Amino acid sequence: MEILQVNNLCKTYGKGETQVNALRNVSFSLEKGAFCAVIGESGSGKSTLLNCIGALDTPTSGEIRIDGHNLFTLKEKERTIFRRRNIGFIFQSFQLVAELTVEQNIIFPLLLDYCKPDPAVVEEILEILGLENRRRHLPNQLSGGQQQRVAIGRALITRPKLILADEPTGNLDSRNSQEVLDLLVKASRQYQQTILMITHNNALAASTDKVLRVADGCLYDDCQSNPKNTTGKGALYRDEKLS
Image (tube, rainbow, N blue to C red; front, side, top):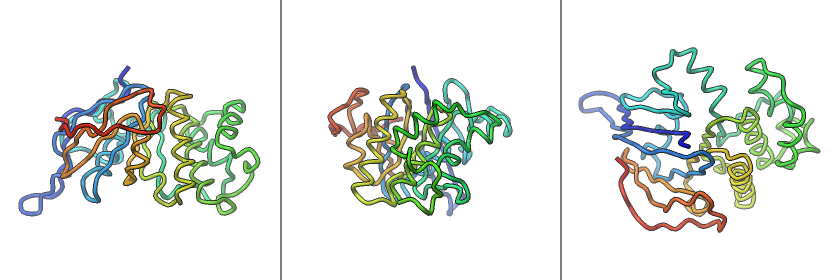
């Protein structure tokens, strides 16, 4: 079952001599439960791609479907509600609410949607993240790795169709980076959670099911798709442009 479909996506900034083609006819899809990494140099277009898929930016042309819903045929208010309920975000800088505890930060997306958290689900997520004893701590009482775990919990709590992770290990050391990656892999396996992650770290990308590379706004398939990859290693085998 395809959760994400991106068809002929283009994003252009400026006009004339200042025109920049950030994305050029990008097309790809992700099945339910897939964990995909997007790699590329700074300015290659990978962040633009993530922002368009997350409906934080509007493409110039093309189509993005999440669970069959065309994001940009929805009215703005409908799109905002759809994004809140169906897309989870994990940011490099954590983006936690400083005045809220660990548990409050995790359930915050549900409260925004006027939903009552299920205590059993909250406990399960806290246990998976190893944060049971930190539930009443504030973000400034946590390490960077612990803060990113909270951000992962916040992304998981709504059981979104898709999680978008923007350099989730960028502010972490190697040990915490691996722990965060392991948690994302576990979420993909245990919850059949579809995850699209931007990273500069090729070693981390190799632990995912599929690797896509963005260069000059074009998308390339660098890695053999393997939905049940349990080796922790991806096999780079081709450089096939996705169009």
